[in-house]
Length: 201
Length: 85
Image (tube, rainbow over the protein chains, first blue to last red):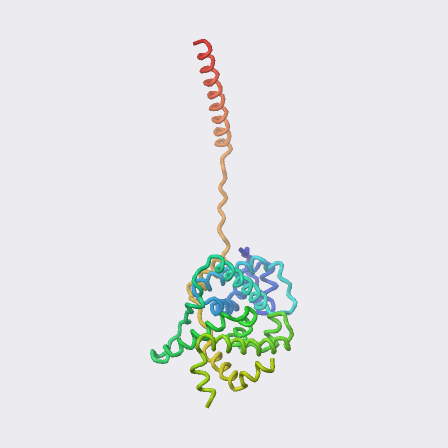
């Protein structure tokens, strides 16, 4: 828990927010939270597939981040990269714990994000989404992370490279391998019938 | 790797890429959750420090000592009665 301070006349910006939050400024802390909560929640939600668990892990990410913010070193890497790393580790722990408990796999129960669509297109979309999420969650964690950062966050390879601590070239090649693997997984779970027909034409 | 590339042509992967961008759309977390978490993280907890009165401390210690002495005296007395009886 961050201790509150008397209001500082200084305007909080993305540039000074980390420094101020490290000094214990709760407004700077709120600023960073507002900036990152949705993206971190999205990342976790698509990796896990359950709203409740996504909320739980999102809370833990921010508790951990802001509990350790004084030890955070600003090396010019986006603050979100640090949060993604924490989220990535907590998701790994979550999957490990779930395997130990031998619960029903979420791969068998994908959850569709809430959307407002017309009923007929919704069902079709849901089926596609289910297949896609099933396939994606069978991929290695780093591949899942890359796909989500690329499509949810719309980040470039260079930005993803910074977040994932790799070179841009490595990300490029990982991305290609991730797509091939995803295609393989989706074919295994029944995507080929519709897709292959389309591609043969 | 080359075999893999041949297996899935470029348009084949492009199709998957378009599916990904079409289906993977950001979702909005529950507003109540976002606000509650923010409040928990940023609000300073109110800490109430309870102060104890000195007098009550001495009273408790004194009572403890008295009870102890009484217990020892009672045990000693009952032992003496047993020996005499």
